[in-house]
Image 1 (cartoon, rainbow, N blue to C red):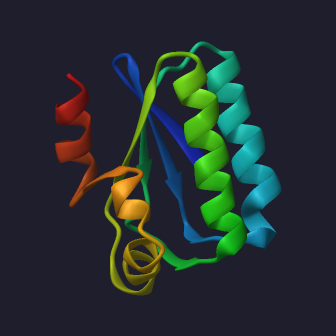
Image 2: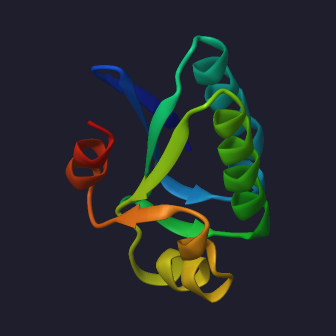
Length: 111
């Protein structure tokens, strides 16, 4: 599953296809670390195509948020649907991250 990073002005959108789980953890952390080391501070995680989210994926999201916040930045989440959204709400991650219906709304909130 590729993790795609796309620039939107001074913001970066990271998209996860199919799942955010143990199998994708190494790639997610690699791409996320590359973006923060490159000076990225404002991120939107596009999870609209993410159909599975497990405990490792949740841990990776917290790790990424901590990394970004240490540099004074922020992480927003967009596009959560179905089972991943239920998990997110069940473990109260909706209180840890701002969640938006789509990437456009999340990017707009950072402007």
